[in-house]
Length: 161
Image (cartoon, rainbow, N blue to C red; front, top):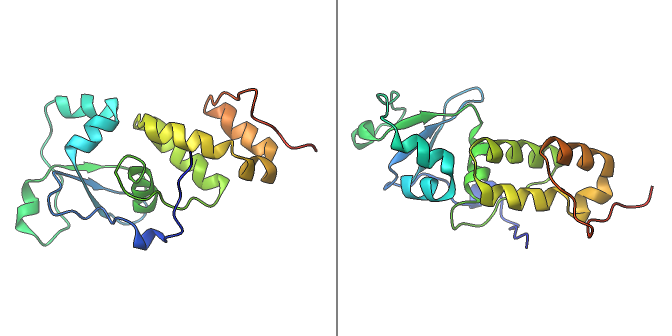
């Protein structure tokens, strides 16, 4: 069941928790920091579970003014803050963000697959093949779905052309 909120991204959880033990440094023009929790990431993703089991290199420099942040590991990611926080909203117990276009669904689904966040992958696949997008652009949905190996069930109905 797709649960989306009418809240704007600014009204949602901002991933700035003081008790975070991982900081992602995003790409996309200028670096931004996203504070996350090791236990949530490893529970939601075999990729992060494996990554955190390996010896870690020294941390990246901090963009924060807090000296306590100096000891928190920083992980660079190429995604923008907006894309990465929307993805993390699928694995944290917070309201899901609004995703308003096939471009967004495709982008976030690709990132979810990259980091192996299967709960997000399944939710985004269901969103992709929802009537909203199938009615809007069935051929594009089919193209995106096949590029991500989304299987259509017999109950998925494409609109008549």
